[in-house]
Length: 129
Image 1 (cartoon, helix red, strand yellow):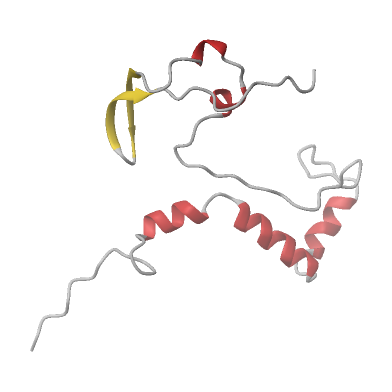
Image 2 (image 1 turned 30 degrees about the vertical axis):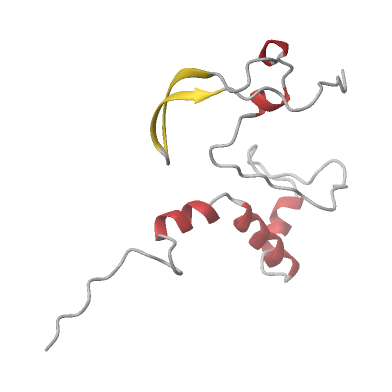
């Protein structure tokens, strides 16, 4: 009798189970499921309890104004630059493209001791206040 093959830690092809769960665990699948279940009336009992007065100060309340958003764009960029690096004006960064600086990071790519500076790729324009 042949011994059974050793089980692999892969899920759905080459993706590991932990990476799969990490990818879908952003919270939006649960939000979408809640919306779908409330349309079908599955969560209507829970919704009915939130519309009345409650003694619980932490209970959810109906919104003051109806929502106007028709679509949502959800960006989950693992390892991408932060909002501070992308939306703040940094005039001193011009002319430093390609230079390396010493950093201490540890992520999916392993440990890194230096990073490359990328200068802004567009002209800065002030919007808002």
